[in-house]
Length: 430
Image (cartoon, rainbow, N blue to C red; front, side):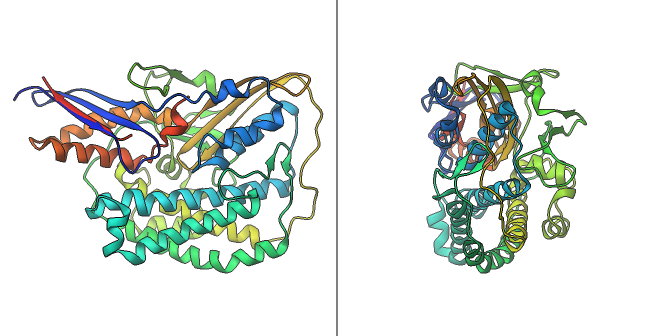
């Protein structure tokens, strides 16, 4: 068989701009490249010299889908540098805000971006013609997430109420009460959604990779904890850059990452979180994981859609618990004084662990900023999985092979705009 190249010029149903290049030599896969061509956005340089108070609002602009993640990682890192400890009330409200982002992000991806691949549609709009109830349910879930972010963050997209030390304004009790009926419906709808996607026909495909996420002994990981790996390691967040290395590759404007100790890529995200923290899921989500038959260590990336469903269930259940609980009565934020220092933090964005590190001076100005997004960390593992996947789906029909490659990429829900510090698919036979 002649050598050939398959190229997907523009990946669809992903956030951002990128492509995929595959070169085949006969029946063997010679090279796979996830080509990110979205221009670098230089946020780390933009932050230098700015007052530290600007960081949450500036970093939120990195992504329109997961701005809360960037705000949470930035405020936790800066509070570490300033020796600030947030109150228990602020801590709960931050988790509540994150619940909103998980619900809207996962709800959007499951229903409009990923489900069409399993049901044979080119888009969520096409799918809505035959599955109107499911698509409307997904849109309603996304609306709930946006409402929660709006209530706590000041607006649904790029919220403005998050600050170092807490919030500029605490929510009123009636704002909580107004959302509870919708979230009670949403919890049941999220369970239905997860059962629905668990019934999809999944390809028989498993990958060998190292799963990594935050972990916490008392709660499902969002804002705090240590790094846990499927190989059995526990890593303090302060050692993040000692354990993980970013590197430039010629075919991408985004950096990729490997573990220094192994020289190999790794995978972050909902499947990693559920694999490593299943016992910390809410009671309903944990029971649902058993009911739908999700393996204790699931290695099929196509089944990540089930993990997203479980996390939506968890987010609804935790959000209801917080909103039904004692209303916050303390001060909205902790005070602090400027001091020179360095702080770092990692939180769990919908797509995986997001690391921030800041160096600040005695005047409260940012001297250095390091931001390591989850999608850039996942890219090398996605390429490795694609190389294995192509051998399963390769055929003389290059259009079908390209479609199957796109399907796998969408399973990881890459946020390409975040990663540029797809989709185009090209397959080449030589």
